[in-house]
Length: 330
Image (tube, rainbow, N blue to C red):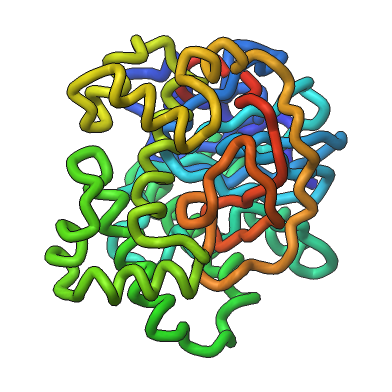
């Protein structure tokens, strides 16, 4: 059984000035607002193991069903909302440097996974032991080293179902490289030419790779990443809309407003006003991952339709009318 009294969350919300590198805590500790009226902007890497109850988690504005044995992988920078609370879980949180030196890809686990059988038993055992050792040994150098190894083992275990897959097609590898470059540069430039120069390939190559993996052009992938970040900040923070636009490279608020309305379907002001409304989209029943595709590389349309495609960064779903609602950052 997963412990019901995991260690407190010193690095979440009103965190202590020196947060633990790795910590375990309850799902409710991610926000001060017990009913999750708005999403929270997650500031650490998270694994969330549902331990009791049933409900829907809203991750980057897409609904994912949760019940005992459901595992969510939440990346730093994503927005999360667990309205209700209808379910509870144990959270493992860590800083990006916690896995330095380990041959582990922290982005490999899918955003949603329903554990079963021996896999569920093994993951529950490892999360349980992490929670116990965080309480007992987290303050010592040896204890911190132990926690880092335990986290590495847990993440490696979660990549095992995909370990025997064939090597990705060249287009998929190009797309992944492009996606990584976009993550670092979307606030500075939306020009495909800048990314092709950084990657040493042609615009045509990038566009062909994006079309093969997502069905969208390279320019669309960039613009959707910018729109996603804007939606996150509008929903989970109270930063002025004009300031959000400037952060994303728009010198004029009107240009940002036109861009957001074109990409999302409603204005930034209307999107923010709707953030405390319950999500209206149907719940996604995730299917096996589509190669290399996730929220940030799929079609980001809050008003659009489509089947979910989960490649480790989330899912996409049909037509929610608004972002739902979180307070602050987690």
